[in-house]
Amino acid sequence: MGVDSTTYLADAKNVYGAIQDQVSTLAAFMNLLGDGSKFGKPINDLGIRGYTFLARLQPNWNMGYRPEGYNGVGNAVANFGNQGLNNSTVILKYAYVPIVITGQAENLTKGQQRAFMQAKALEAKFDMKDIVSHVNVVMVGAQSGGQLATVDATSLTTTTFHCSTAGGLPGAQYIRVGMPLDFGPPGGGTLDVTGQTVTAVNYSTNVVTFSPGGTAPTSTDGVWLSGEASPTTGAFPYTATGLQQIVSSTGALQGLNPATAGQQSWASYQAAMANAATSPASLLALKQFVKNRGGSEPDCWITGSDQINELATIATTLLYYRTDQGGLGKKAIDLGFTTFELAGDPIVEDKDFVPGVTMAMDSEMVKKFEAVPLSMAEDEAGSWTRVSGTNGIADAVQGLLRWYHNIGTLQRSALGKQTGYLVPAAFVGQPPTY
Image (cartoon, rainbow, N blue to C red; front, side, top):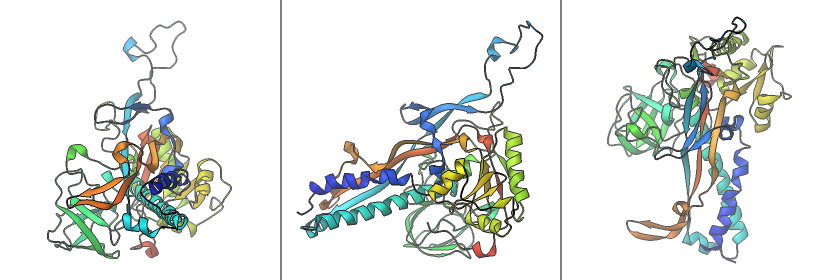
């Protein structure tokens, strides 16, 4: 039996639908987190879709000892209740994977339906891995809004640019040959250069070559995977929120801002390590400062392959590799993360982390929000349809895999980070597989 647009589309929805369960088994940061949608209130106002919930800014100070029978607890009716909480909103973001099957491929499958669907199932598997990998880069490595790199004035031409490493920026860490790129101002705005394809990357010098060229990017431009850069500031960002944005002492997040009176504690602890080598003492210091300043007990560290490699050289009875951890450590091991343990808590390796950076967090204070898991679009807008272009209707059908999600925090001060650690020489200029 041949595969046509009737039999293929029905089978394809089963093939692509089956990947939902597989997504949660991959070693991606979001899979370490608990489900935030269980306690957040869904919102669906015009232009906003997400979850709103109470975030913790500070302790409840309307309490304490008083004389027996005292009637002034709270000092005023307006102060009754927990004043350390405020409304917070996580807005969900869409990630897409377009799927196309040509009429020629359909004809070639006559009598080979099983083989064809097996091939499409393999394609679906790699589609899933690719989008999960990119989402992980956005969540643990990229700058605000999914920005993969920052252009500086060095080696800037109509076909090359240099990725900045100033202030701990990742250089060309997240750029790959064949990747389509757009260039524009960080934070959104009119794009300077679009539709360029990476033809070469020198990870030692952080110089990237692209084509077809024609226009040079602007120094300080952000670099995005094509389509993810917002051309207007009001629409920024298109991507999910990342740890580089969450774990910060400045900047608005989820509708709260430490620059606003009464919200000053909506900030994470940060420390610059000045090229020091990582050590058990420095890791414990990070955990202790997060706990002492935020009042929340971190239960893990997250870091990159470079720092895990450094830890392996100084493993002691206090810092060691083990496979029988509980809690988040067990979840990390089950997902396939490499972990160490220090003072009873796991140190989890995420290959997409920015080099020289380590974070500590109370994982209960960070949640994932997933309204639509990665799956075939079933609504009319995403249904399979004939491909229609400027030259007419093609002999092909198209559809979308989509994923509607984000991550957020209940308490920003329950996370902290150290930046600027010494990166082992073997890891300088050696990016992970994207």
